[in-house]
Image (cartoon, rainbow, N blue to C red; front, side, top):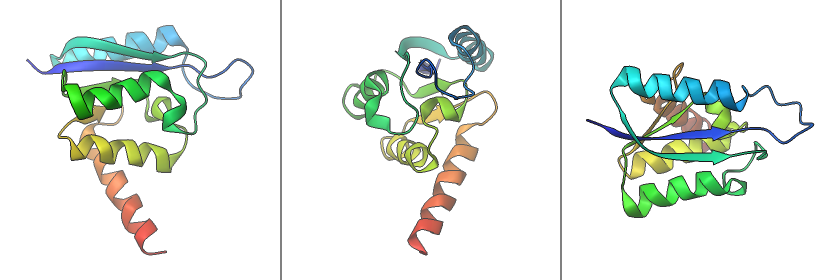
Length: 129
């Protein structure tokens, strides 16, 4: 059975973010993990975290540390890629980090292959500038 972790990020109060609320995200990630047959062994949550930079999210930083050092799980499940970051460059950086360590990120509406393909396209576009 594949070991997985869940990640939830809620936007700061008063922000105009369109992220789903915490309960909807939780139901989404738990349901997705169950449908995929994943064993959820860890949960990470950044409540009221800004959406731009990866390193302004303590729980996401902890998930990255796990991928790099502990290797407790193989898949990080988020409700939506915007929950990871609302900035494309930061999302692609995170996907790249996970790929380097042999881990993956999945969302109910966007699997690892699609996230990885978007990251590679983004990197090619940036290299061409």
